[in-house]
Image 1 (tube, rainbow, N blue to C red):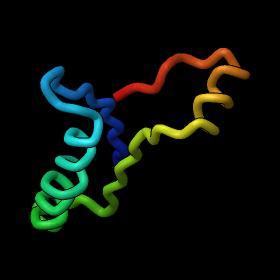
Image 2: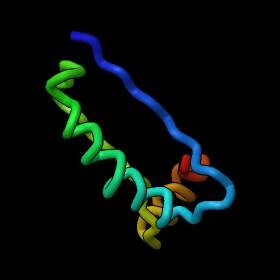
Image 3: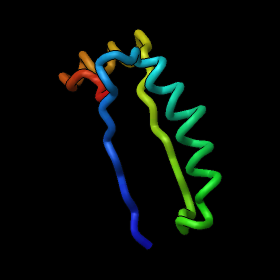
Image 4: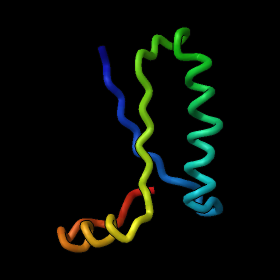
Length: 68
């Protein structure tokens, strides 16, 4: 089995909500539709979330700003 991980950067013209909506509502179903033909056994999306708690944790750890 081969595991692929992609870090994606959104187009500057898209808001974060538009970008995440596209991946959830368009790309995800497209992958699901072709998963068998592409021999995809598992597909996982991980989205950043804006939250005061996340901001506080990131600041307390000296972490970088979230990736798109």
